[in-house]
Image 1 (tube, rainbow over the protein chains, first blue to last red):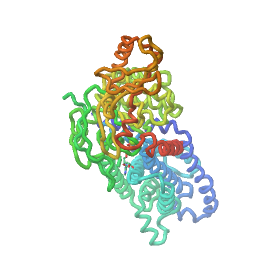
Image 2: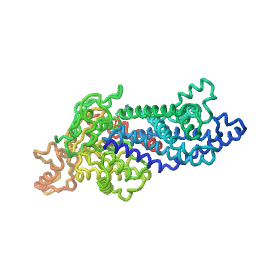
Image 3: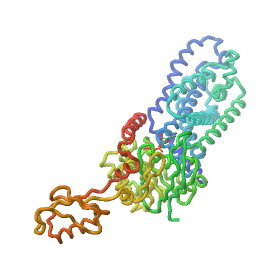
Image 4: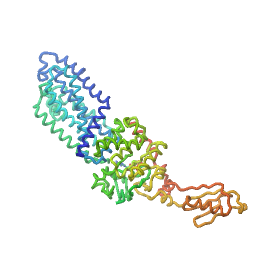
Length: 257
Length: 333
Ligand SMILES: Nc1ncnc2c1ncn2[C@@H]1O[C@H](COP(=O)(O)OP(=O)(O)OP(=O)(O)O)[C@@H](O)[C@H]1O
Ligand SMILES: [Mg+2]
């Protein structure tokens, strides 16, 4: 019972904070829109020839890109919200949680859960905007996609927490974000198919945790994928469990040293 | 057990650096215990160990009878903490900050709501109940943190430099709350400070810590009596029976009597407060006319200088503190 209250209250906190941080909400929605409009529509013009659809598994480029943009959003939003625990660490709220008698595992999972809920809200908004633009997105596929999105957003949030707990200061924070973000995005197949990548790059793509949510969501939303959707789902689930497990253990054993 | 905190030979090292070098003390139930020391003395480290956030390198500590390592959970349930660094959530309102705290400590519903209102009243923040902490001044934040630490009715509250960086007036207000806290909520208070006046004003007993060691402890009076006597200065007018020269007063409680200049004498006594009425009586008997009475008591600062050879106010101190505050407020926005 007591563990539940830690979980509940951290979820509550993250949702409350999200609803107050208007600039963050707008930022996370505007960013993908810019990608879709300027990047997506730009390339759509290029891929506007008869054989083009074959390049993207039989769908138009915007339909292909849409799950990629959702993946990109959940990755950024999840990762940044996870890593933002470093601000709590720097400015005290962290200690308030550490000194509480509630289960630390419950509170960190509650925090990650809450952040992932906010990510899901953002994804829904983006999907609503994308739906009329892209040629053939499946509405039916939205539910399994959101499930995948939720799991993987917890995975990235957990990953952010792990990194933040290991970091001693805010120095290198920006560098780290840039260093992680670009490769993760480009290798994930969010913007172009994995199947046509050079062999060495494919190997890296398979090591990219963002590859599987993007591929899985693409299967359900666009009806095309590079891998078996079951593989995607299994791997996403496994990565998520791993990420939550490690972040819980780290947080449980945290001291203020 | 009537000891709220028992610390035995506590040592805490950070790598090679010994922050706390074997301290022992006890805090009695219901008292305000002041932990006084300059910057870097080991005050925060001690609080972190006592509040289970740091594991001691060696030694033992019990809070409310529970061991801080082996029974950390029990300790956490029974304490409230106000950290040196701000720990409120700026995006949330005063009420929400307290609500989250209450829920984390397993309080809920009507009971929690009533308790929060009661405490917001206690620290005079009721009218700012639904204002985001972002807009609060330093003093308001501190008050809210104190109120928050009380939500779950802890037996002991730890205050780490509760008035650091606040202006004198705000500081005085916080002191009033701390006094009230003991009288109205009946909690034991363990507080650290590097302000002499703060320890003098608030603490029933004080431990002075320097370089990780306790150099003295006791009531403020006891500490002051360590460096000895208080001095009474008398200015005399001409009395009927002392034609011109001023002789001295003699009595068992007067340790020394000196004439400073004609018409002015200094009396060394153990306790000036008790001695003054008797001195006046004696003077009357002799028919002296007293024009002025002054006395000087040693301050805690004198005690600190006596024990450590340096002035607490000058030791490394304020400059570093100011810089830290500037950095903090910059990073915060
Ligand atoms: N996490 C840490 N790692 C290494 N050294 C530390 C750490 N925290 C504190 N110290 C060092 O331990 C010593 C005691 O620090 P502590 O914070 O306990 O002092 P303090 O009495 O609270 O001082 P202040 O008035 O600055 O708050 C200092 O020399 C400090 O630099
Ligand atoms: Mg300190």
